Image 1 (cartoon, one colour):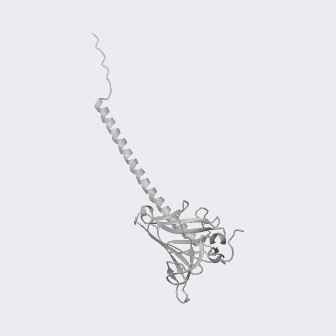
Image 2: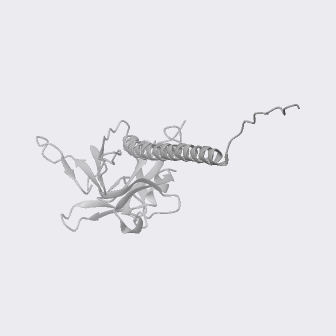
Length: 247
């Protein structure tokens, strides 16, 4: 009588399969969680980097806008006859000037009339520093924004008067979420032996020696670059009576 041959069969039990699937699921879940943490850290770092670049770029833009100021004489429409006066408006929360630097064309384009002003922030939280750019077309075009000179109610001195600055759809926000933002101007005094003084209102007949834009963040964050005060000296290197034009 022949004996039947015994065949060995290798395999996995149901319990072993369940354990393997469970371990693989835990491994995949751990890898996905680690990937999520990495993506969150990357997004947070990228957001801070973009905010820092935005703040740094805005400060550089403001600095170059002020340093590119061009002294021009405007024919102000103050009455039946135009009145010639230096085109510069200097108030605590509004400033107008002509500059060779613009946001769209940098130093390569035509001069622009810049309107820098301060408005309330979104949902009335803090303040914003905003700029309007208007192509400079000459003394007549700039004169449509000024209204001659009027007496200062406090000092009685003659001071320039301009139309109000208003935001529009093309206004660009240079700085946002500010605790405060104000403009001050370095003004020479009548006594040449005394140093110039910083004043919140420009009432001179020409242009200030320097301009300072003071600002601070609404909420301080040491991990991010914060808006800071910008100061630019003003150098007059050409005659204001000479028309500014490209040859």
